[in-house]
Length: 129
Image (tube, rainbow, N blue to C red; front, side, top):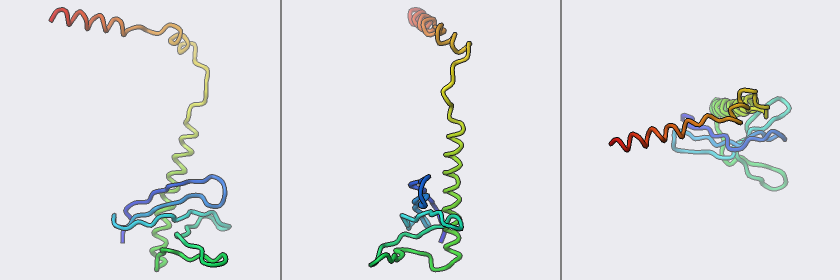
């Protein structure tokens, strides 16, 4: 069974639950609501579950083999880390409000009006035809 898609649907900066993920197998079967949780020993995944009785939870779907769980975990963590990197690079590269330089100010005060000249040339070309 191949993992063909991983979608991080919700990312939280605060709290222990860091993300909610959907994963697709063989482009035919999807599992929603896998959670990325920050525990005492780092991140782990929690398969979708349902509350049964007093505080007990039971997985709705889960891998049977530890190798499969590890493949799922690695695929999810890889995509989750990409999302975090993109978010941090967007924050680091987003332009802060800066005052325009003198040259930029000059352009704002005295914009170049090439549009009128271009329009005049187009009008002359149309008249010649």
